[in-house]
Length: 119
Length: 111
Image (tube, rainbow over all chains, first blue to last red; front, top):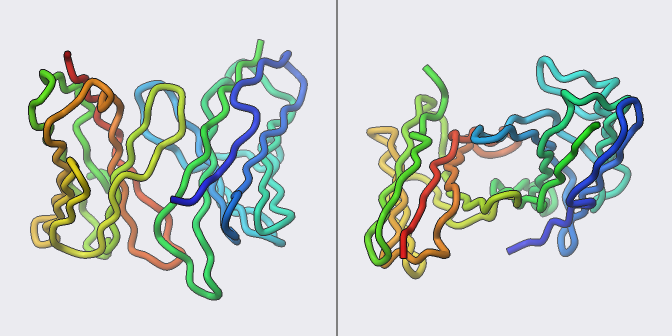
């Protein structure tokens, strides 16, 4: 299967600081990447859809000024949690879908996830 | 009614038993069905991918889709302790449509 690399796997930061999480598709191009948040024993909650070269599409209730998404290339999307607070502590996961010309494959491949702890 | 329903478990089985997992859904537009395995503190890993109705087998894993009943299943034969994980079902109408996920079902295989 395709490989999606997410970095860092774990980060601890102080309240009020910003944290950047990277998501890379290593062996395929991904015009679309997705960012999820997962709470313990809960399913994945889609936060936003990241489109290469354009603005991200955020889900209802997700603050776009707090969760900044940049998709600068076909293989890299970043999520920056700005002015982090303890309630932002969570498991963040990215996923990417392969693009072949105009066809977007349905299978999604996930990164390893980032455990964010804000103290 | 939620778009995708999945019993979160946990489900405990002895080693060697058959594990049976399922999801129901309400959106008749769903055409693509996936099962993911997620180990603790890791991202989900794609296990099975099925288009439309029917069965698909891959080693010890079998995925079934019954679109008429809006019901999908995953079977794990000869379960191993290494199969202990959370299994998420996911589905999509295809194209640029998002994936809809179940809550995930925690499975524990006891040696």
